[in-house]
Length: 437
Ligand code: GDP
Ligand code: MG
Image (cartoon, rainbow, N blue to C red; front, side):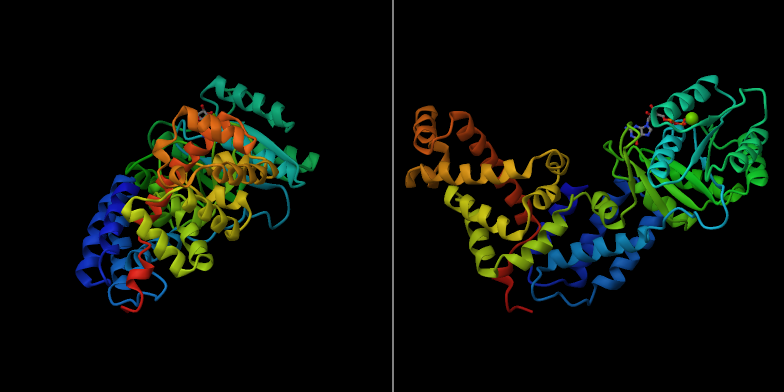
């Protein structure tokens, strides 16, 4: 997705302003890209129409290139469509019943335990309920997960109807003062009448505060059909998308949100029980758009790097002579943009890494970097490719570092070049465009 979009935005960036045909060209590509991300075709159409209505004739802000303006509009509309985060409904008298529904393998059982852990940590007293009576392994799975997080699990084997188990669990919760009852229900591979009847019965006897549809992020066009199927029989109150840690961009979330209108509540980000994130529209929008948080980076860069700096840097990039002096300059710019951890977290692919990084260590590395670059000759700074083994050894000795440090920096420099190019593709022709609009 991102390659395609970037190619389009690159094209746009080279033009002076957004004309109607610019917008249409871009939107044709955006449309294809969203379909590729598994957003449902009906949803894509609506989305594209909204963008067109806004983009054509819209002012291109002075500080933005036309391409950036389009990125902004696409991103803003994605956020709008995804909707605002809505917390779990824990109003009313306890116990609050949370019912998880969804196809087999979507991640319901795992999510039940994740929610239980989260609720327990927030001071609730959750009770997990094994209401999937078709697979003995499912009951065992929930019991094991419950033990891990120290949350009790109510189960009655596979012979008692799910509705009865659920009803008994709610009664037990009242008696023992559990504040939330999390129902793990049975899923099928497809929407199925028997499953729906069972869910209706469970709903009837437990009156859930929340009925959350659990959807695997990998579910493609089918997601709309699944969501409509469930929503018709057991009115959904929210949506949970799991396995967002995989390759899927989460286009299904957009589709399901659109057809059901119910809010997205949580994202499952891994197999571990702590891997749960509250839904954040801007982050998910960035993911669906496929640009990491480059958008945020652009925004911050706009605020902090002067237009002249940016223009000069862009010229260097285009001429292909971005060198170590520029690298040093760039590091200083980045320092100006805020704490290093924040910045790293915004760079696609580095976010995860940044979480585990010791920031003091990182700041120390910055100093080391300055030392290493200072030990390079002018020649070496301007033409990093000449940095062979003996030069690297000399630089290491000169800067009081190791060859490994020097190698690492050269690698980082290359990564940086790549990143700068990515940003360049998004259009940073501020200098050139200035005054045209
Ligand atoms: P259920 O059939 O809907 O109850 O699904 P399960 O909870 O049993 O999950 C099915 C599989 O998906 C299991 O192997 C889980 O470990 C895995 N799983 C669930 N949630 C996530 C997630 O957010 N990320 C990843 N990577 N795997 C998940
Ligand atoms: Mg299950």
